[in-house]
Structure formats: C-alpha cells, structure tokens
Amino acid sequence: MKCFSSEALLKMRALVFALALSSIPVGAGAASALPDFADLVEHNAPAIVNIATVQTMRGREGRGSDIEELLRRLSPDDQLPPDLEERSSRPRGGVGSGFLISDDGYIITNHHVVNGADKITVTLNDRRVYEASVIGTDELSDVALIKIDARGLPAVAFGDSEQVRVGEWVLAIGSPFGLEFSAAAGIVSAKGRAVPGNQTNYVSFIQTDVAINQGNSGGPLFNLDGEVIGINSQILSSSGGSNGVSFAIPSNVALNVVEQLRETGMVSRGLLGVLIKDVDYALAEAFQMPRPRGAFVDEVQPDSPAERGGVHNDDIIIAFNGSDIESSSQLPFYVGQVRPGSTARLSIIRNGEQIELPVIVGSLPGSGIASANPQQEAPRANTLGLSVEELSQEAREVAGIAGVRISEIDEGPAALAGLLDGDVIVELNRVPVPDMQAFGSVLESLPETGFIPVRIWREGRGTTLVLELK
Image (cartoon, rainbow, N blue to C red; front, side, top):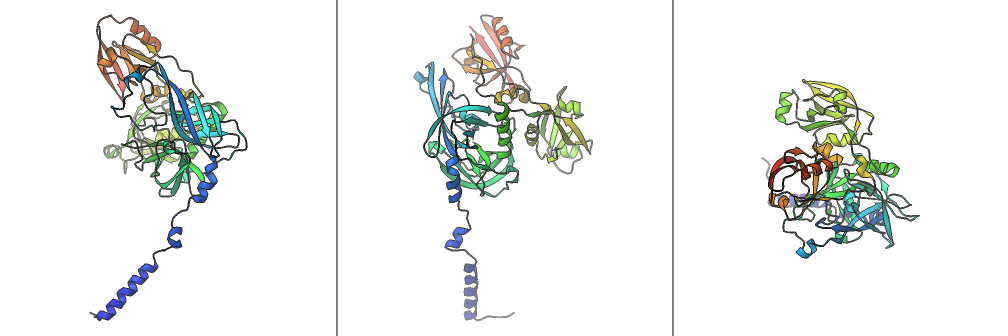
C-alpha cells in the first residue's frame, strides 16, 4: 500500500475541490442553464385575453363560481345567506382566460368558463374591451370557441401536442384570481392522463406542475418555442389553491374540436358501444397475457358498432388504429377522435391470441350539446319538493341509464328523504321514468299520502330512497 504525506494529501484534496468548482456554472453561466421566458411572454402576451362573464341565477342555482375548476367542490359549510337563497334571481359573475387564434377575433377558452353566461366581456392586453358571442361549446372536451368583432389582432401559434415530452419546460399565461396576464412556468409531469372523477375520458390530458389557479381556466400552455401545446382546464386540489397538479387539454384535441365548432357549431365523436375496465394482474394471467395492459370488454352493447364489427365479451383491446391501449381510460379518447362512419382497426387479445378487427365507428348520440346557447327546457316543479330536467344523451350513453336529473331541491319530501341536486331519478314508485313525459305521468298517479320509493343514480351507482307524502 502506497502512503502519502500529510502535505501531499492536503494538495490532492485542494486539487479535487478546485476541479469540482470548475464544473459548477457560476454567474452568467448558471443563469444560462435555465430557460429565459421573457421573450416568449413579451411576444405572446398580446394574444392572451381576460374573460369576464355574467349569468342570472334563479332560485338556488349556481352556488359555485363560474370558473371553479371542474374537480373542485364547495365545502358543505359554504352556504349562501338565507336572504340570498330566497331571491328569485340574482346576477353572478366569473372570470377566466382565453387566447386569440386568428386576426379576426376568434378566441379559445374553456366550456365551463362561458357555459350559461348571459354576457361575456373580453379584455385584451392593451385594455380594449369587447363583448363576445359564443360560436360553439363542447362540454366533453371542455373547449369553447367565442368571437369578438375586431380585426388586425395578434394570434398565437400552435405546436404538436403529440410531440410533447415529459420533463420539458412549459409556460402558462392567464388571469389567476382575476390578476390579468400573469405568467407561471413549470414542467410536463405526465401525458395521457385520465383525470380522477371524469367518467367520460374524451380528453387525454397533459399533466403539469405549473401553478394553475382559479381564473387560469382557458388560458394557453406554451412550449419553449412559444407554441401553444395545451389549454389549461382543471386542477386537483384539496384546498382550492394550486397543489402543483394541473391538467391541460392537448392542442391537437382542441384544434379538432374548434375546427368542427367553426364549421357546424357542434362536435361529432366516434362510438364503439362497449363497457370496459382495466386489465389487472389476475385478468392478464387468466387470459394468457405477458403483462396487464389494454381495455377489458365487460359487455358489448346490443346492435352497437362493436357488435357489428365482431367484438365479443371478454375481448381485450390492446390497440386502436395503431395507438397502444395501456389502460381502459385511453380507449374513449382515441375512439372520440375518430369521425363517425370511418373504419377503425382494433387489435384484440382473444383466447390468448392477437387478432385484428376492422370496425365501422358509430356516432356518439347527443353531440348537439356543442351548439351555441342551447335552449333548455324549463325545470318542472311538483309536490315532491323538487324540479327535474331531461338527462343529456351523453349521460345516458356513458352511464348506461335513462331518467330525469334533479335540477333543484326545495323543502319537502325529497329533501327529507336525502335526495340531492344532480341525482338522476330512474324509477318513481317502482315505475321507470326515462324522460320528462314519463315522470309527469307517474307523478300525477301518486297517492296523496304514503311512502313512495324512488330509485336514483348517484356518483356512478344506483340506490333507492323512500319519500313520505303527507
């Protein structure tokens, strides 16, 4: 073993330390290691807009704010004062973000920012103010297209969201809490996210750690080239503030929706007609798969495109049009991007073997919700102490139920029995009520007193409650 003197050891340590220091960037070098967003913000800020909405609410509607992100819920104690609860109508305001996509005033924002608004006011970066009209909105993708009457406006450039990589830098510009034209940076945390609680999954979200807050909804998400690769839409939060888990609609999805909204005012989506679930370890073993992946077909719906194309119960769909399906939540997204009537190619595991099936994709019913300012049927009051409205075709198709949705609960038998706003009544007094007409007929035949069973659908499951009529 070779020995060194104390003096030699000290010299060696000094040399190692000097070499380590030389590898660390300092001053201007350290700053250059991080992206500088100043030019990006300066170039794109003129195309970002602030959106303010006003909506007249009636009765007990709309306890939340227009621009609360879709995954938020008010706490049970967040109640309006009693005197406000009883007012027949009152204005409610909200704020959000958006961005110009053409020099003649077309603007992209979120559906939930402008949904139901009686008035939409757009403020440009140079403080000019315009009133906007709705071209079309699409609830399933949470994309809305609005327009102001102006010319010669700046517009953003779009990038390819399919090329986004996990870990790359991104920048959001919007109006958090009404603070106009605020920028926030972060990285892409994940791609292809299905947001918890979202039962439709027609969007495969980009997840980021950018500080997105109330008011950022509808604003753009930029890559380092200054291209829009997403539209900020939702957050996961237990407190109402940013927890560093936010979701953006990929630009490719948004552009597909916007193109259809501009052409027809509505959006068409593909439909297979299957009920699916994830493939776990046990299913993979039972069906002779090397590893768990794909969408397990629990049920093929009768006379659906899937049935006509030869899909069977217990099939496992592992790819759709060449796109791998790792989890069941990915399949609705890929199917929804296909125009109805076109032929899609399914890769399926059946009896341990992989087969290819061509399927002519159908059309998701009720895509007309994308039309601008749809007419809503007036809620119906009754002696049960509730008002109901028709259930959307999307809800019927996705949840596989037929009924009427509770739009308002007043004091009375329904409230005492525990029914809530948003519950779907599928049976009244043991009689199916698939629509408003059937509900009205059963309602008129109810006795004046006694106990009445009501079958409802709530949060993905059915249950029966009992109303007492006095």
